[in-house]
Length: 313
Image (cartoon, rainbow, N blue to C red):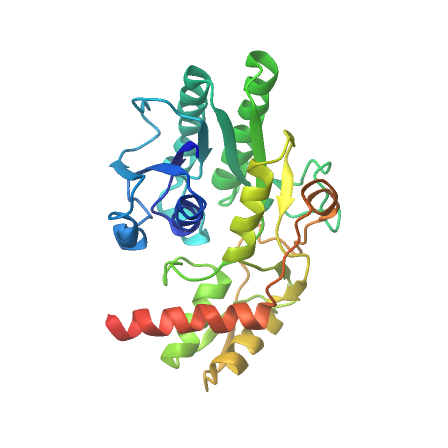
């Protein structure tokens, strides 16, 4: 049993992670300022032994009393809709928040786990993307606030690893979806599923030929735990390598949900990546991990959750 601090623990990924850690017997201290997270994501955890919630912005000084074995830094808005809405907060949590949480890990002698992203690869010129690829990022574009915040976070994490001998893990997350996503977060999967359930048009930006690799949240969290428990201190891709075009995804969502929604097209946003798929060689060989949930099955599970949420609202 370890005592683990999870920042962003009331968010989409963070809440699933808190639940998984508690499920295996760990004690969890969840920190979140609720800028994009929600207490409803973790309301089932408040009565569980070993769970503590603290409302806090990790862009300011971070301290947790008592022993800490692991700090897992998942705090950050991560949806395209947030990049223009709260760009400064994204930059701050990726820089100041990473510095503050690294400081906590160093002071406690704890392992540090950074939630990074496939966005560090930008609009990649290498496909699929191995961890050795340095990326192709526009630092001053609208997506740059998230891309560069995570690239900086990786740089600082590895600097602490080298300069302070801090034990670190860095995961590069690829397009994760599932229950507890925000219905208005601007990601393709949630946008499509919610529109289909409401009978509204599914909006594709551009011609829909751009590709993504969609990972169901249970697979992603299982990958986090495999990396956390490993001895791999360098960045590691965790995601599905089943690549789908956005147009194909929209058609699948309509089919799986049984929707009659039409599909419409709008202009492509600036710097939208044309393709994204992880090279999973490292995860498979060093962690023994690979994704198992087929995207159609994942869409069905996600739609079932959203249907209940929409019925309640």
